[in-house]
Structure formats: C-alpha cells, structure tokens
Length: 228
Image (tube, rainbow, N blue to C red):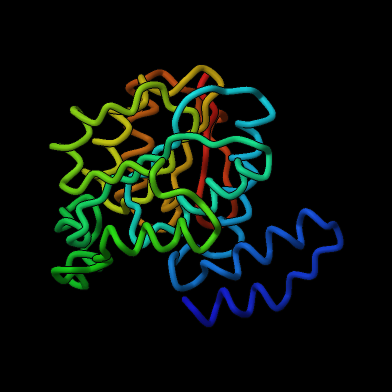
C-alpha cells in the first residue's frame, strides 16, 4: 500500500496552485496516517469541497477512523475554505471486528485480531500534522452498534464510511443515514473492494428505495451518494 501511493504521488504533477497544496497535504499524511489510495483521497477532498460550496450544514463524521488521515484531510480542505467544523471519529481502536459469511471466505481465512488497529493519539497526531485543532475532534471508541446510537453528532454534512465488512457498513447506514442533511454526502470507501461492503450498500439502498444511479463510483474502489 505504501509503495502504491508513493508511485501515485510521483505520477501526479498538478498545475493548479490549489492542487499543488492538496498534493503537499496528502503527502504529509499518506501512508503514515491513511491506507486510502490517491484516487480516493482526492475524491474525499472533492466531496469536502462540494459540501462547502453547497452550503450543507452539519458535522463531519467518519466511521472507521484508523489513524485519522481521512478525517484530517477533510478538516484541512474545509479549513482552506475558512470552515472549522466539529469532527467525529468512531472506531473500535482495537482493529476490525470478525467478518461473517457475507464478507467472503478469503476475508474470513485472512482475518486476525487487531487487523487495522490504531490509537486515539494517532488520530490526534494526524489532525495536528495538517495544522488542525484537536479540540474540535470527538473520538468515540467502541463497536459501532454500541456507540453510534448515543453519539451526539447532530446533523451530518459528510459521512465517511471506512469499516470494510457487511455488518459494520450496514449498521452505520442504518443508524446514521437519517442524520445526514438533505444534500449531504455519504462516502463508502471500501465499495468495490470487499463483497460484504457492496452487499450492505445494495441492501440498504433497496430498503430505502434509493435508485441504483444515485450511487456514484469513485474508481475501481469507492463510491458515494448525495442525499436528496
């Protein structure tokens, strides 16, 4: 993963000043604080800008924070536009939960305790690396089914979901989608990567009556939708 993003960064030669600033910011957090590739990180930055330009009010919520690189990047982008929003990072901070049959036999056979574990201090360091204020960050440790119902996020402008497995993705969508503001963005980082993630998104969209064309692909991996 580290080699891939280094190669991607080397091949990206932005001509616009704002893109050069974005490349510099991404270079400070990847791969140390995020495992997300360059395509998806640039898309995350675009989605943060989209929320700002559309005037969508609300907090920034990330489920599956790991070391905080994605949350730090969203915060950095919004601060470039003069915004200082409350950031919520929800993660077990113990690693991924055990996958089930919907996630596929390969995932189940590869799983180990502590996979993608990180600490709250890692997240704070990521925020500070990009010049953010950690006092605006609300970190909530624990399993999502237990923490999401009581997390007082208020209205959500941008929900970034990076939790890999069916149960975690479906739980996040079930519990938080209603909090997303009209026009707000839901980004699913692992769509197209893990079968359980795809199934969870499809099940949720079917249950909500959301048309398939409302889900926009980022690339080979990653997808997002805008709430109507």
